[in-house]
Structure formats: structure tokens, C-alpha cells
Image 1 (spheres, helix red, strand yellow):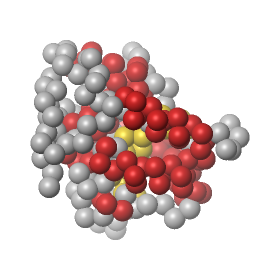
Image 2: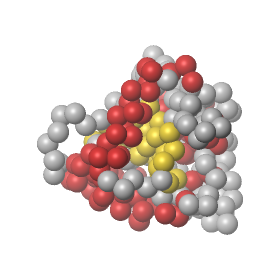
Image 3: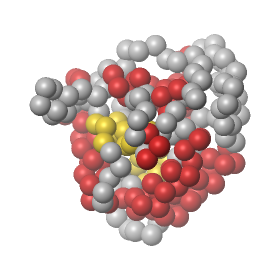
Amino acid sequence: MSATKTKGAIPVSHYQQRQLEAYAANIAAQKFDLTRHKCFISYHAADTDEVVRFINDFGTEFIAKTVGVTDEDDFIDSENSEYIMDQIRTKYLGDSTVTIVLIGKCTWSRRYVDWEVYSSLRDSKLSKINGLLAIQLPSGKDSQLQARVRDNIERDEDGIDIGYARYNVYPDSKSTLRDLINDAYAARTSRRHLLNNRRSRRLNSASCP
């Protein structure tokens, strides 16, 4: 699988990712709550400032696992795609049960976001599927949805959600986000039959103006 960087892409190091994960852990530690779910946060590096704001606003409502895939990972050039997905699950998603995709302007274009969502929805010997929740960041107001997320968002003619995942605007309260996370967690069983992970994995990131 190609590790070529798209022109204009913002590279993120493991060090930067771990700094954000440590920051999220400090926010989560401000509240003792055994009912919180472990959430993997998938995002595009260009949106880091907005991700920090999201963690500031809501980081006490979940246990964040924020270190994602970067160009520094030694497994991304493997020709064995199943091995790559297993590595993403083992190293990064870990024991998370809900994946939150933060949708910014160019999130749709990032191959690593696609890989993280694919691995989240993959039922394997290593792990069960995650619930899936997409949250619109301010910069993502007019952006398209990431394709694999879009495959799992469906609404009827009345605007009622009938797909596996949910896509929401930026929450107006902590309780709103908590309810959305709880719904995504429950969907792993209640809406499992609606899950769609058939799309081929993105090989490279696309350019995004």
C-alpha cells in the first residue's frame, strides 16, 4: 500500500499524536465516571485545533483514544491489507467501543481516516465492531462526508435516521454528546444488520483545496 504523501497534506508525527492523546487523558481524568465509553477519535491533522477544542468541550464525557495512523508507521507499506487493518486495530483502536469521526473540510480525502473507519467496522478474531458517530466540526459545515461514513448514514423521506451510524452537527451540550455516544455503543448490536463496510479501502489520499 502506497505511503506517498499527497501534495499539501499536513504530516503528523507519533510525538504530536501522543501529545494530543495525553492531553485528552488529562481532560478525562477531571471526572470520575465508570459509565463512560472508550472512544477512538479519527480526524484529519489539518483540524487539530478544532480537535483540541472538541476535547476541551467534551473530553470528560468519554475515555479518548486519539493516536491514529501516521506516515511513521512501519506497517503502512505492507502489501498485506489484512495485516495493516489488524495493526490499526491492535495498536490504535485497541479496546475502544465507539469511533468518533470529526468531520472537517478535507476529512473525506484522507486515506488514514478511511482505514481507521474500516478497521472500526471490521469484525475479526481480534475485536468486535465499534459503534460509529460522525460529528461536524465548524470547518466541515460545507464539506462532503467521508465515503465509508456516508455508506452508513441513511435517512428516510422524513429525515429520520435509519442507517447504522449517525452524523450530527457540533453538540450543544455534554449531555447531547453523551447520548450520541451511548446510541452508537448500543448500535453495535441493535443496528448491526445495517452496517456497510463493503467499499474498497482508499489506497491514497486525495487532493483537497
